[in-house]
Image 1 (cartoon, rainbow, N blue to C red):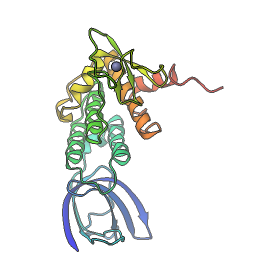
Image 2: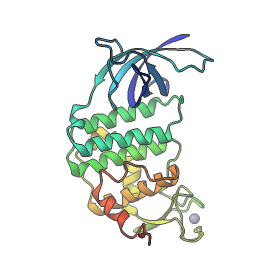
Image 3: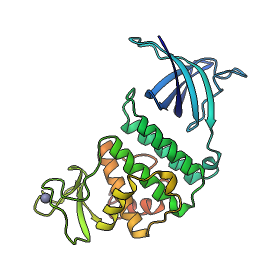
Image 4: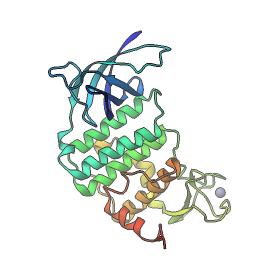
Length: 267
Ligand SMILES: [Zn+2]
């Protein structure tokens, strides 16, 4: 049995019996884990009361190797409640989008300290209250870095099949199935592919290496933002095999587009 104390980010909670909760955390040292919290509603509990989603905290629990029983939380101290993020609906939705991405691309129990750092930086960026026009840039920085860390880094500076670099193209063709852009010689039909402006491709590559906290003043031209949004939208739909639930919510242009040409109305 080992005592573990680690920084953690609350991703989910579910009631368990009358007095307990099961909470899921992304932890810095142990990755995504679930802990049982007994007596959660007891006053002045060292377990920090009921878990609020997206709270950052320090948790202590006992981990039993070779045991299938869910570890029990023994202490929890909230270090940030992100009040700035909770004040605005668009920011809170962008926070919930993080939860959805983490639960989709980070396997349980896999140690991913870089993803914890990124998530923490992203929440801090949201908590700082970026103006709505800069919010997409903050989200793009998260999405690009998350793809890279999860092993799905897209190839956007050369053809993913033959390696040829696009020369002087203003628009390239992107194929989520192949994981990047494909030149005309390597294309096998247009099915599932979409156009991406070269400017948007460069923007995606550039933002993926940025700390989201440094992107809170960066406002992209609307055309570029729309292209980048479509890229991540298509890429995550391909990876997750479904549309992330939160994806549509914080971005009006995205919602408008998905009502338009991309998804013809069913008749
Ligand atoms: Zn090619």
